[in-house]
Length: 299
Image (tube, rainbow, N blue to C red; front, side, top):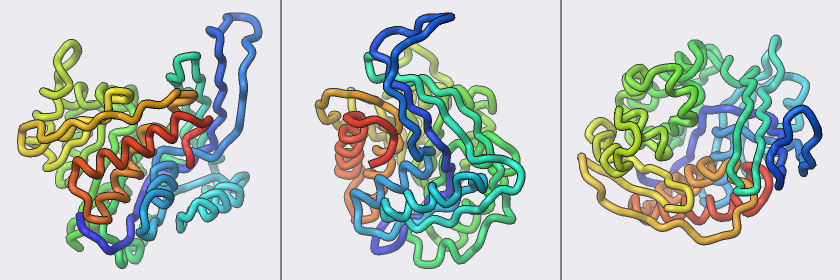
């Protein structure tokens, strides 16, 4: 991946309802929490972090409902992203409820809404004009229409010689789709950005197998694999072996929502500026460290 050139992200825009509850959830009664409604979505978050940390133009293709389209568009533009939001006539914008405990770890309740209704008709070849890289949110691969759109975008990028990355997005949804089916769908991508659980699942190496083995195995299929490990930083694997380990930035975490998206955005922005994989991973770790110190998944 080399610059200059634009970054095109194809992914999801959702409305996040983030509830931070310092005490454990109390069944059948009230639990005090700090609750905020914020713009989110893995693809949109990554695009915003890339725009914040890099100098390249960042574009986003996503689908939203009419009820919040203007709010989401304004938030993206304010973050420095050029959005192309397709308004869905049937479904509202997707919504994610993020329950964040005292340890800053989050559990998601996800209603994908319009976000996974992206389809090939939403694709415009001109989106790749001047683009140096295409990033696909893994959430696209978990529904038929959006998976078809992702395949169209992937083929178009390969035809133009534009590099492609994918973030698998969700171990839970990944298990439902099937790891092998996912790997077949992303054949031809240049960069895979899983977290530890996703890497183990895709490599067919459940606990207690070391994540390094999983990363190395995946890099036999995808040229560059970067595994995010939360407070443990990131692992980089190429051609069947670990080539670098990057430490995380030490911070007091408040909310881990969007930390992986921040890493992706920081990593891709650095790569567009010709950073090598280890340097780009350090940029990703810096973005992720900043992300966990605030509520929500955006800069």
